Image (cartoon, rainbow, N blue to C red; front, side, top):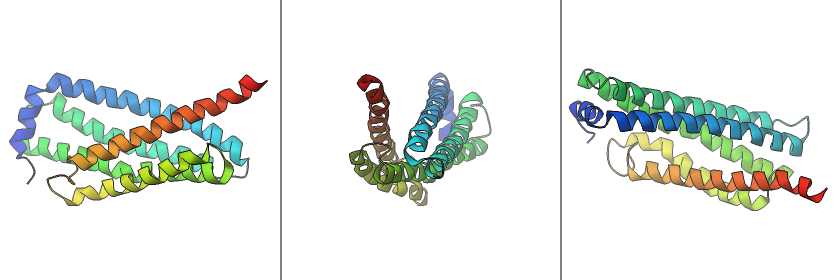
Length: 190
């Protein structure tokens, strides 16, 4: 059973500064993620050539997912910024924020899948990164379906949501390091 509406406003009162700071850090992280997505666009575009569609699909999916995730973060910020709001309204914003975060999972799964295809088909990244991506995409695909559970491990706020975020971070770090390394190799060789 989800927490009562008054619990959300009480949480907002007690943790207002921490909530606002964490939401701003999320927003900054999304900006960095979008810039990284643009960098991957260039790597994939170079690997697939001018006639390919994976690069632009990659960029569109990461920008779309980041936008949906950012909208959820903005909803959380409203709750933190206005902790004196009507408890039912605050709870609705809180739930909408979690639903947006979970819905963004579809866009992130699309992005991971496109990068996997680019790694396997065009060698945009080392193929071994694709096999990590497949597993992370499957875990992340289950994430948006967590909205069906109102509470517990598979709810939007349960431990599975944390597992989704952590696996995404591992994949992102792996791809980041390999993307950086792949752009450094030609410069080191010449």
